[in-house]
Structure formats: C-alpha cells, structure tokens
Image 1 (spheres, helix red, strand yellow):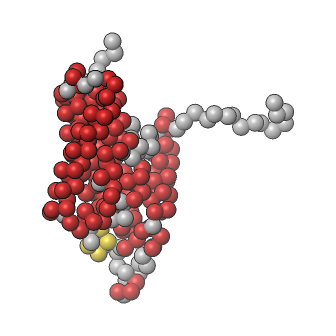
Image 2 (cartoon, helix red, strand yellow; image 1 turned 120 degrees about the vertical axis):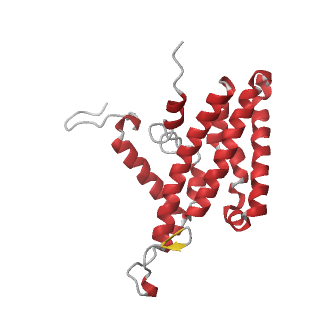
Image 3 (cartoon, helix red, strand yellow; image 1 turned 90 degrees about the vertical axis):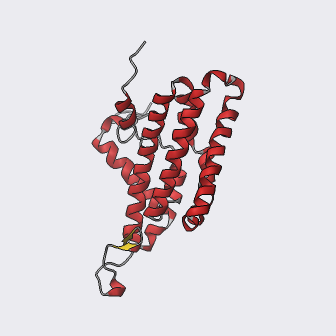
Amino acid sequence: MPARPSLWTTLTAPLLRENPVTLQILGICSALAVTTSLATALTMAASLTVVLTLAAGLISVIRHHIPDTIRLIVQIVIIASLVIVIDQVLQAWFFEISQALSVFVGLITTNCLVLGRTEAYARHNPPLPSMVDALGNALGYSLILVIIGALRELFGKGELMGLAVLPLADQGGWFTPLSLMLLAPSAFFLLGGLVWAIRTLRPEQAETPEHAPMGRGEPAE
C-alpha cells in the first residue's frame, strides 16, 4: 500500500503543481464569470473555500454510513445546504457583492471541483486529510480567481478593490482603461495564457500529443 502524502504536501500540491483550474480545467465557469473585479473574485473564492472544506469534512465523517447507490444525492444535499447558508450570509452583510455574483454562488453546488474532491477524496479518507485536501484545492482555485480578477480590474478600470492604481487619461494621467478586460472573452484569454505560462514552466503538466507531426518527405499512411 503506497504511503499517504503528508498533510503539508496535500495542502500545497494544488497551488501550482496540481492546480485544479490550470491542470484539470475544473471550475472555469466562475473563473470566467465573476472575475470582473478583485472584490467579487475574493468573495467567490472565500465562499467556495468554506463550502468545499466543510463539505469534505462532513462527507468524510459519515462516509461509512452513506449507501453507495445514493452517495451523489447525499453529497449534493450537503453541499447545497452549505451554499444556501453562504448565500444568505452574503445577502445579509455583503448585498452589493452578492448582487454582482448573481447566480454563481448558487452554482457552487454543481461546481466540478467541489463534487470532484468530495467524490474522489473525502469519500475515501478520514476527516482531517479530507479537509486539508479540500482547503488546498480551494486555495489553488482561489489563486487563479484572484490573479485573473486583479488583472481584469487593474487593466479594465485602473483600480484594485475600488482604489485608483493607474492614473486615468480622463483625469490627467496616462492610462486608458481597456474595456475589453471587463468582458467575458478577456477572462478566457487570460486563463488560457495562465495555463500556457504554467505548462511552459512545468512541462510535465502538458498533455502527450495524440498525433506526432509528419516529417517532410514521409508518405501519409
């Protein structure tokens, strides 16, 4: 039986080496939709981190009592209950951000990352390793959201968290905001560029080509 990795390795591996967004391409809907500003990206990241960590712990605690035939239903009910609580908290204390996030907080329930970690890890491991694994993956997801959200707000508005960073041209400065950065395609291109940069630095993350390019003069089969 292979040795179980340490809690530190479990926590830190999903940050870059096994990042769920850039390596497994999970949870990209929210990465594209809620990263128009750093505030919404941070709120979404914090919400998913709380839901994923608590859900992993709860599912791990009762893992021996969940019938295999209804395991997905039980997992979704637990995740959805936590999402409802988070959504109500946001509406009560952070109403403007809750409005900006729209339906995407509720869609945490069906986020591939959340269901993937509870199904693949929490259902087979004790509570502490499961929660550490969930926290690590949530932090890896959060890192990507924060990077994209910061870049989009900085170059789309010249601000970060609503505070002016770049001097705007209409106020006597030199920077003209790039309105494209506030549209969904910009998040797609930024995420693609981030995946390319990480896989360039860590070539082991690149997929093996399905077809080798045909050399010059080689006849096609």
